[in-house]
Image (cartoon, rainbow, N blue to C red; front, side, top):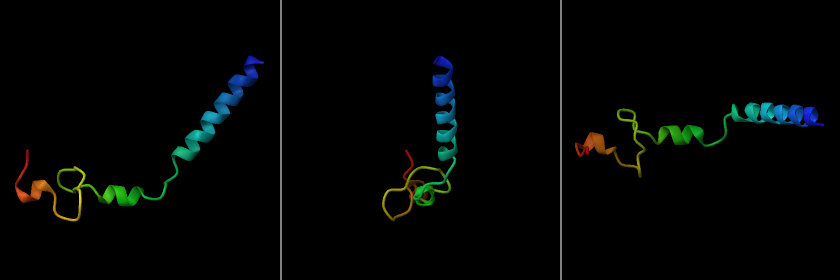
Length: 56
């Protein structure tokens, strides 16, 4: 009985790993929301704070 539970658990974890490697919609948009020079998330449509000269 325990062997069946362990095998089912391993199969379930393998299926979850396969789904984790898929690209979900919205990842490209989330990656483009980062500043290319400093890597921080940009809020709004304006330039990043590092390009304005207001770096903290």
